Length: 436
Image (spheres, rainbow, N blue to C red):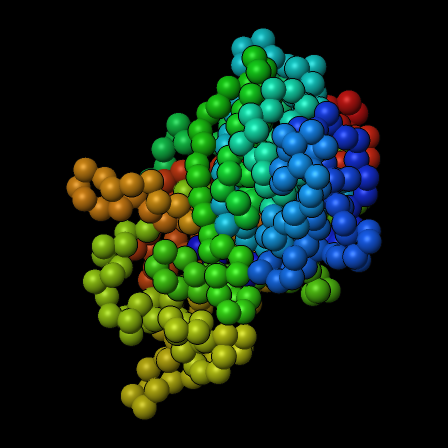
């Protein structure tokens, strides 16, 4: 678990018209509601009221017939499906998430995969705009706005052999090496196709999950699925770095889009290879169990020495605030390093790993209490990089050799997925691969 931070949630303030869909769901046009007259725009989570939802005209839609009810900003916030990059990479952490992997079924090949990605892309576009699914919508999210929903699609190593596209498989998608801290469950690892769903409302996220699963039809079957969560927007007095289930701030040193080399580190260049991955990224996905009973036996001082940062505010043990540069050479009165040599945040620093950097965008998880009475809880670790061999792998190898945190965590599943660039208007995700 690298010590880096997530980008502040970027709010979109323009939502073009979209086709009405028979009064089901919430269309972009209905989301605009009274916004044209009042000049309301999408605000920050927990801020002023955002776009309004009008009535369906027949008294059966969201709100009261003949009236107009304004969505709270959390419901009104909307991410864009079409763009240079897929959604769900640089947006801020969402309150609710699902990770799901599929395998193509026997007999399903390139043609079936293309049809599936076309269906999935259309569904993602609709739901992210606050509209209903095209067919058999469950109405689970009928009363809600988009709620910052994002849906992201990726391809696993096995996808290319199943579709006859082995020559288009990126070298960067070669299987990850084994690490000594791995205790991987193969049934919950990898997969031909991967979907990441996130939203600031749990029902909106579940609605998208169910729609994606139904859209798979006979072309693909679920291999594994995991559910996660983060702190809800507006739960803190001001925006701040998220905390994980260990109570530590998690993501302080994330690369930021404002940095000059951000795109180079996170996204495949437009002229990169293979060409269908232009503006795409690679996602490493790991289910990391936290041994919370053992962790909570430590004093706060011991926990801080393991991480290398203050638990209260995320500041480095060498002093300052959360964003103060860590002084790796500072010693105490006894001549001991203030930041221990095996502290997690020391080991994961890019300047300690040849400049390797990853963009962390995780969810926490809690899947109940095991037979031994310990919580099955931890982190659904998702990190993004232009090349995992220069991002995740060198950092994890360094952690494998002596991270103080390793005795309190267990890597239980793993996956690596090629996530192509965003789809343009009229395109579906992966079209350049499947129709190229």
